[in-house]
Image (cartoon, rainbow, N blue to C red; front, top):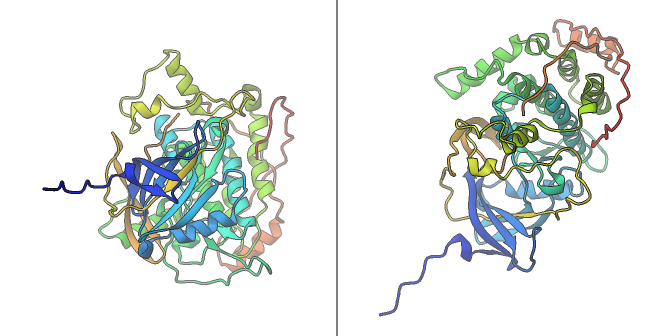
Length: 442
């Protein structure tokens, strides 16, 4: 009697006869992610990750086109391979480190102002680059910004382009038309007000979402979190109403006024306006320098916390949703890499499996996020990434802020046309203090 054939495991899988599939890292509505490596290479630069998705229900094809369009950008993972394997898409991109949501949890769900300012300039720069390449992201959230590994551990990377969309013609730069009655695309917690109102998204909406993300990091939560409702639509409506009733001044109370100026500016943009990215980044870089953070060096909170744990000043957080095994892998990189910390880029593999079952990883729990992409309204369960994660920081002070470059009269005229109350942005110039050793990475 012949033995029954052995069931294939992920260890048997190959992608393009080149990438070998290892352990499973995560799964969700998007598919599955596996760790892997290039079997034709050796050394620290050959590790991969694997994600699974069925062709017929996948946004991975869209995502691959966006990766190709963004190729070469700072903080954009390299895509090494994309093809259809059987009935699934397969994509190979760089292996990255922990997400900002992972790190937020690791740091007790609160970032210092210093860390928020460091992240702000990088996140704005990533979205600015996408916009210059004619794409909107349309799903800004902390899970979609990941830190790098090794020599890029200080660098914020943007991922998950499954909901990305071209907002203008690549050749003529003709902007897409204004539309209404659109369904909510993205994550409700960070969606712009116009997105809640059914208006077609444009560049302003990505930037407004970044503003909410920054305040999420500063405050620890947003006023519209935890609202109860009988149905998904009712919950979306409650989130929308709470955002409409929460002014930037209220949302940013107790924090530097630069955050309020940022939100007022992006909320005041018209549908097809080109944002002044340089002004927005300067808001935060000037605050960074005037606060004296430059003298302390560009060290993120999670690095400080990790160093403290290594020195015995504290113990791993028992309540942290991040496994202690993952905490132990957080690199002790501070600021820009030194010449002796050269680690080659590490590819990650996305390979679709035959099943898309939610399988919790280690001690990670499943979280529910409101999601409505590609016309598919409803809840989507995303597993918290079991990525490695890397302290606490400094409080806020009151600082004067520079005025926006857009004329105030233009903003007022626009707001009158929309029959909305005028929001005057009173601001004065701040003389930026020179700071030695402050190297902009943006």
